[in-house]
Length: 473
Image 1 (cartoon, one colour):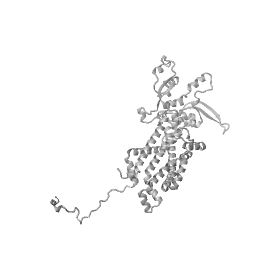
Image 2 (cartoon, rainbow, N blue to C red):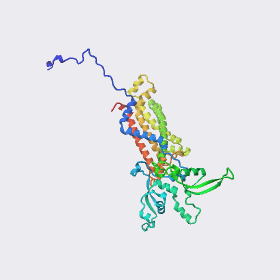
Image 3 (cartoon, rainbow, N blue to C red):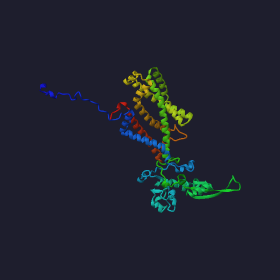
Image 4 (spheres, helix red, strand yellow):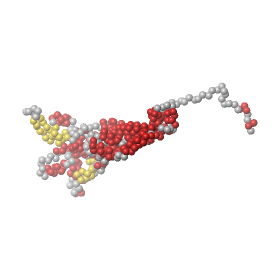
């Protein structure tokens, strides 16, 4: 059968005079980190988590400055007049969500006082739940013996009305006055004494509801001269926020101290994340430095450090934290020391294991044969191969610190004197969650989002920095 082939067809495809050239590469060379970034972007969940983390960090920076306000007086009594306001968010309030309303139980006489048609300050407070028959006839037989009603109110207007126009304990004090104790003034809790300059300023801004009394006082600095003091009742919202309740938006509500919860969460987040950064950085520097040296050289050095690490790791973290807090208080630097006293052991174990694993690979032996120094081998050849696991570990170390710090703050072990962490906000919210659930909802939601985002982000970084996946689609 071979004899039937036409020999004229058996010719070389390329004659000797032809030249075969390689086709030049049209794409640019992609470096290790560029390739890692390209792989990371393809992981949709991790990339979304990265965007969420960026937004959190942005709000940590700008959040405390978005809605600033200062109470005219930082005493507990006056600050509490704007306490526990419910969340009110623009646009969402049009759908009945976070609209600043609340269902509460109000005393009968207090309720009728607000709903009185002749009371110009009570309009628009009660939204639902007040029987029309009771308004038409306060002595209606169907409501005899009923001392309180559950109604839905505009909580912002209600709080301002209670704090500015009628104290919460108005009727109880008034009853005591009627029983003969004339020394008690039913309006005493909301009376302010102003000097002439402040009185003129508040009058111009329409802060003053009414003037109760004008008192002439002798000027001690200039004998023979006098000045006036004005006892007035003030609109708390106007004085504190320079706006009306219906124009006020606390996106996350207010705390029991009358502070904006939105601002407090981002201040607490800044405290927690800043401390997490420093703890992670210190643990990384100490743990990775020691672990890489011990793992690379091994031998006696490895044995000695292993025994030392066993001793340090046997000390309970809670005991270290408790002793430091009892001795030095709950300052930020004390908490950082407590978390780094034994926290570097995890970084040490990761560095030691990875360098021990890769130090005898073929490419390492080739580099050593070509005369590369130990430092170059460690940081040029071994370290990039361990980077994926290391970065993932530290990406997860940040939310781990935040969660642990929040847990101990919740338990009361960590109690900062000059700042408030998210864990402390959760602790306070848990105590009043039945009456004011927003104080627990928003801090807990922040912690949950942070934990999920950092876990997804860490998983994406692990795959992106894995050298074995380089070039894999």
